Length: 90
Image (tube, rainbow, N blue to C red):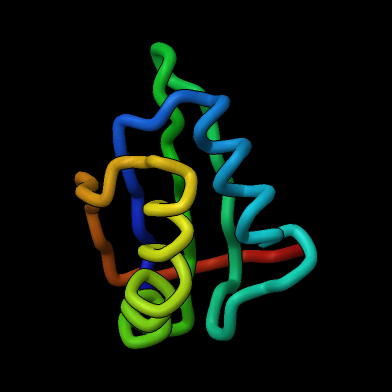
């Protein structure tokens, strides 16, 4: 499993438009275990846990990239990736 922390320079309104477009709340991407977002100093930060890097890349390339373009969101992002050592989901 991997943990990704993503900063794309996106404000809340753009994130909300992207979230609506992706409908991630109801249409869960294959391999996604967790998705969370928080606003930090006016910029949305996203944390994700994926079953593998392969699933994350497939999502980014096949689903996310077109949706980013459609809502006018930045395509580039600062992404930190960590091999997840331990996860508890009560």
